[in-house]
Image (tube, rainbow, N blue to C red; front, side, top):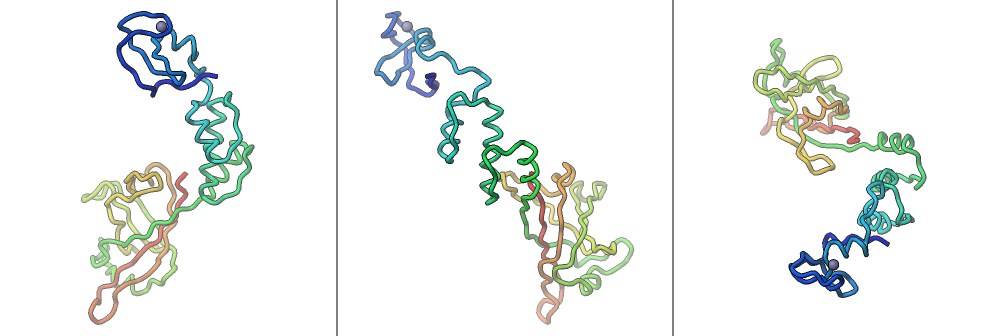
Length: 222
Ligand SMILES: [Zn+2]
């Protein structure tokens, strides 16, 4: 069995197998310090087309039954199976790449965020507050990229299905499932499709006359 020794302790010293002095030696489980040449004889390097032992260990820890001769591409496929199961979707361990792709595409994530600029007027003079007064909760909206916006290359317009604009998306980055702050505009430019609807309309009463719109965006992160 080959074993990953890359993380075992290392020092300068005498190899306890061949006796060569002043070598870089590593400590192995059997209790010896061995030079690189002797270590290689004892533990031949793992063929490159096979998954790493660490990967195999992780797959087994997740309940998959895999052999030590697991090829890398098969390990990638199985990691995807686990990823899909992590979303609560039942999928067989032997699912094909096509089936995995199809399952990934059904995964939806949602983000809640407030529309910006809803107190302003649109370039055509229409009053966004007046437009928002005609909006209802649950209403579907469109997001439109505006890369030539003079204030921000990441501008995303929020419009009703009839084309009336109610504002813009906030520009700051939002975390996605990978924990990276990619902003929605960048994702849209990469081809991610967002579905937007009104979750809630705020304000519109005596002490807060200005109306605001809370959006729910849903998208497939894969
Ligand atoms: Zn040696």
